[in-house]
Length: 218
Image: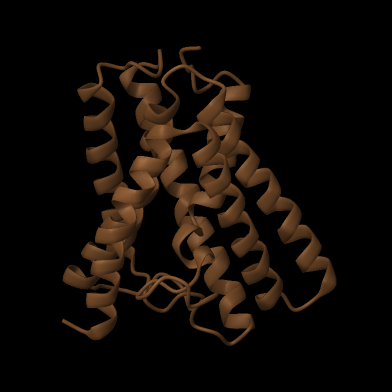
């Protein structure tokens, strides 16, 4: 096992319980956590952006993304249950892609991110669907009135956007000739390296709610 993989493993072991606790508690603690993550994300995006226009557009999008997390956590019944659902989709998407890509390898997906493979994409969809649908039924649909078919489509859409977000950030990192957006999290890089898919997935989830595709119990 490489040093980077060891660092990634132990960072995840430490950070995941903290994230779960903060999300579960919500309120002031969760909002402060969001603000801190937003500040670090701003800094990293500004550092990797090549033009003033990109810095402005990216920063504006980050505000929208973090605002959508804030709204989804604080405005609805089931609050943390819903956030955990979206986090589970994004994390299992990332993990599924990594595991399947490492084990089965296969043809490369794109030059933008040389480590991405078609088998990894399949793994992302497979693990996110299995774990997220299990979560949905384990909680007996407590946070949504959506049918099985609807929730499957929602998981698929959020997983897709999460993967595209990963590729999007990889593209900008290649333009800036850097491997990671920062060094804050050992084995992972910066905040943006860890939440690249999430910053796109949460706005999508919020839009799905606004247009009544995600029928959250309020």
